[in-house]
Image 1 (cartoon, rainbow, N blue to C red):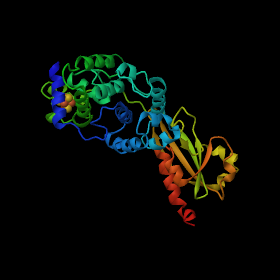
Image 2: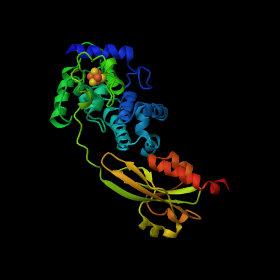
Image 3: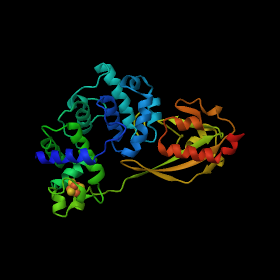
Image 4: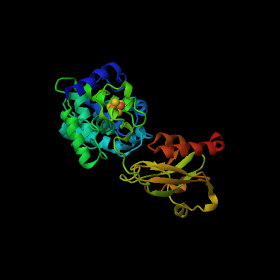
Length: 346
Ligand code: SF4
């Protein structure tokens, strides 16, 4: 179905996005970096992070040579921190195993840490013009609607979509324009709610639009309630410094700094519940569960006694904000700064 590819590329050239910070360059390093950042993250958010990251780590060797903490620090707030860990691991592997040069095929790219099949195809299409099919969430939505594909797009339905995406690959048009066009269409017209079908270049052939089934496709997953977990965060501060703990490298917020957790740890620090000020609880939603955070502000006279335990770090509040801390911790640190500003002003 060549008309599908031509519709997409023609539309992209006239109505697609052309001024994103990572566009207009075939160097695989920025292409890869942007594709990893764009996984599960909006273009508007990535547009702020990408230039900062490039300024600090202008090439794959600079990134591979950097300590992981420095990567986390620049990634803080983007979420899905396993991406940052894999990003660093991938840079290290590209330098160590490929002499600092990214492999030039989607299949070889998919062997690197953090690069799945769709991301590998996108990098190969943008950097090397390879005819490789992408299938991210947006593209699944476009294909399910356009071809009226029933069923939740996982498992066998996902396999069907991969086969369809491959069969639609154009033989003769610019792969980077086609790939960008699919991404742009899924992000700007064929959006989940209220798609803009009258403006869509696929409207005349889109089965979901023709059949009035746009809102029914893709078939939604059956929603299950996410399990809830609870954690108490101890914000131990003298008003200038804060005690943080380096998390284990894997698991949630792996490798990042967060406050010590659990009221039972007060004893470890020679503190009691009398020292605590309860702050409003809040919820952070992860992919597979909701974390109910109960923060406690604990003001102490001086911090020195607490930092002998491995993994504990005492940072100034300002430095802590610059370090690799997850977004909810960053918000808490700002609250601590506001609540203790009298001490810092002395
Ligand atoms: S016509 Fe509507 S549903 Fe079909 S691909 Fe275009 S935006 Fe999506």
